[in-house]
Length: 88
Ligand SMILES: [Cu+2]
Image (cartoon, rainbow, N blue to C red; front, side, top):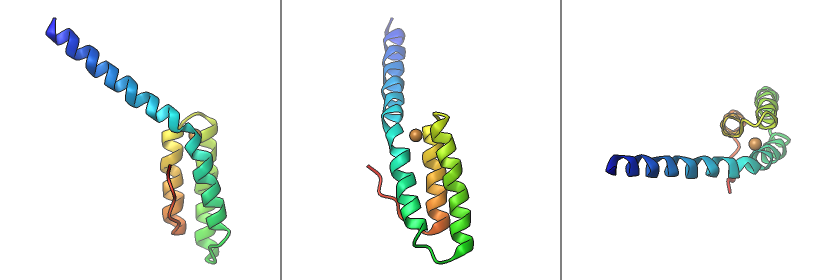
């Protein structure tokens, strides 16, 4: 009986974390906007092109509903372009 209760709590926590991920779905467009603004100021063309490719992938992942992966891709793009993202 105790074990069942523990399993329910664990499941509840997992669901709570899951909804946090869903709630942050709106974050991708914010990150992508920051990246586009930042990339426009990158003078190194190769760096900017690499970053743009990653941003395009992030946008696609976001549209496919893969928000966590989109955020990860946005971070990759930021690293490639040397941009610091402000996350909410
Ligand atoms: Cu998203």
